[in-house]
Length: 119
Image 1 (tube, rainbow, N blue to C red):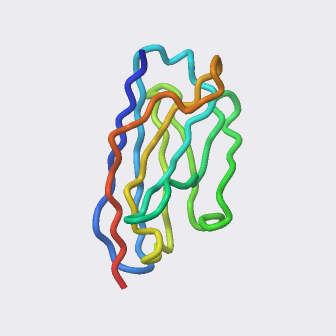
Image 2: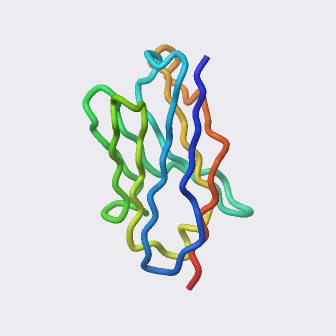
C-alpha cells in the first residue's frame, strides 16, 4: 500500500503565493508520476500538474503554466507545488496523487488541502 499526505493550503490574497507539499510512503517503488489535481465547489476535479519521479520532467495545465512550479525531494519522497500569482479562480481543494507504474492510474490520493484566494 501507499500513503499520500498533502498539506500547505490556506487563505491568501490575489497575487500571493503558497507552497503545497505532498509526501508519500509505503510501497514507494510503485511511483511513476506524482500529480496534483483540484476541485472547486460545484465543478469537476481537474488536472493541475504532474512530475515524473524518474527524471523530474513536468507537465502543467494551461491554466497554471508559468505560475505554478513542481519540484521534488527524492530523499523525503516529497513533491512541492509552488503556486505564485494566485487568482480567485485558483480557489479549490487541491489533491496530490500517485500514479502507479503498474496500473497507469492515479491509485493513491491525499486527503486534500483547501486553497482559498480572495480578491
